[in-house]
Image (tube, rainbow, N blue to C red; front, side):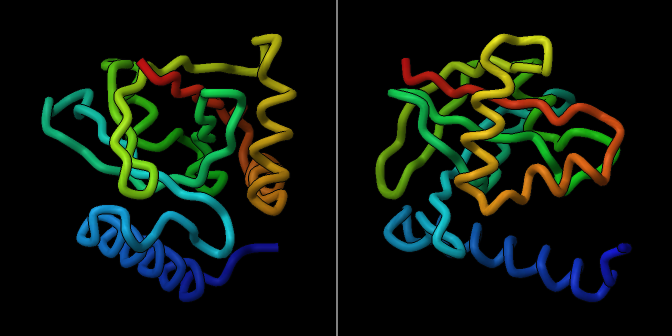
Length: 147
C-alpha cells in the first residue's frame, strides 16, 4: 500500500520540529519521540565538510548505541550514513549528555547484523522491518561506540 504523500510530508515536518526542540533545549526535551529513545547525531558532511545534525531513534547494545540507516525505506541510505562512512569519528547527544563516538557500519554479511537489526526493530515498533519491505537495498546498521 502506497503512503499518502500529505501524511508523509506531515510526518517529516513533525520529525523536523522534534529535532528543532531537542537541539534548542540542549536535550532537556526530546530524548523520546512516540515513546522511543532518540539521540542527536553530530557528523561532518561527506561532501561539504560542514557540521550536520540528525535526530535518530536508537537501541542499546551494552555501551554501544545502535542506529538504523533506513530513511523510511527509500532507495538510498540517508545522508548521515554517508557522512559517517567518510568520517567515522562523530558525537552523539543523548538527552543533555554529549558523547564522542566512533561509527562502525554493518551490512547483512556481518555476524552481528541480524541480532542488532532485530533489537533496533523491536525497540522502534517493528518500523524497520516495514521499511525493509519497501526497498530493495539492505538497510544498514550503524554501531556508535563511545570513545
